[in-house]
Length: 387
Image (cartoon, rainbow, N blue to C red; front, side, top):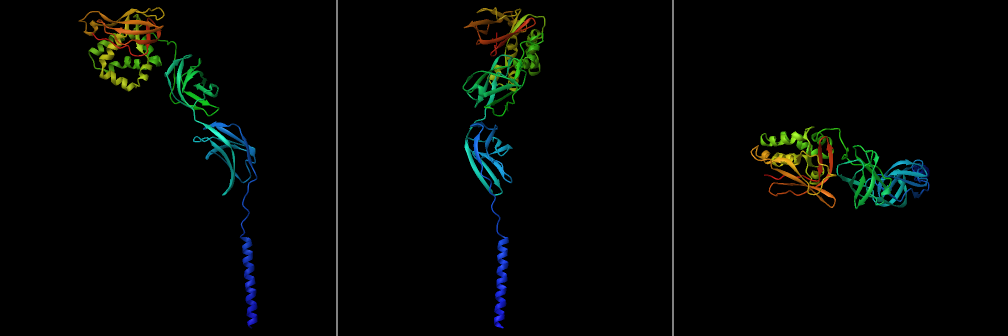
């Protein structure tokens, strides 16, 4: 009896061992996924810019079931197009110079190969420009960073029109406004990189405008927005009375189609250079209107349409700002004068008072003929001399 029990127990143990053996065979893990051998042979270029496309050439760069990824100095690059022999990627914006790495993975299984080092050039930037307007064919300055010193690598357009780079000084590019340019924004790229844009718009000045008065010219020409603000908004800015009477004397010329006269006004460049906003300009007029009503009339020469091509050194012209105007008809017709100074071929205007007082001379930039008047554009305010 004991022999039978032992025999049955042995059969039971053998049966269990068989089950366990079968179970172990069923639970054996499948072989780990292994990609085919792959390699990087070359890149289409040795340097790039952030945001630029880069192509990696090699063998077996894409494989069934595998996921291909590209990294530049540890930063993942967006894959634009992938094939077995090439992968085109977008260089990440925060990329830095370093090794290129390509990985093919499935789940947690992966294999990696390294390519050559890629030089990542900094992103080119146009920080601003000056002046904010120009006529076609004139030059302006662009303030830049990270542009190539070889101008052949730089591409700049204004509202889609190619801009010529004339010269450079460190990070300042002197460029010529295209002959067919219109108002718009600057776009640029370097080293075949992506196209960047500047939000600030650039204004095109016309050589002439279909207007008949200086007041209309100030409104039409983007170089005189500050003077247009002063002339058209003056009466709303300052109290009534004496200030308006003096202003009306200036307006009788600026809005006239019959009077012959010349007016000396600064372009917006002066205010941009001093960092004065329109708001600050208006506040200054409100707080010191006596300076600006006198400035308006002291800048007007009566009975002369000055021609800069014929003026001579020390020529003087009487302004409409007289003692009689100052003292509401109680004074005389003695007035300030504007003297033209020519030095080394450069013309300046200087206002002088009755008793020898003078304001600093101001460089003359250009002149504009408007009907019977001449608008002379100055580098800064002419100022005034009180009686």
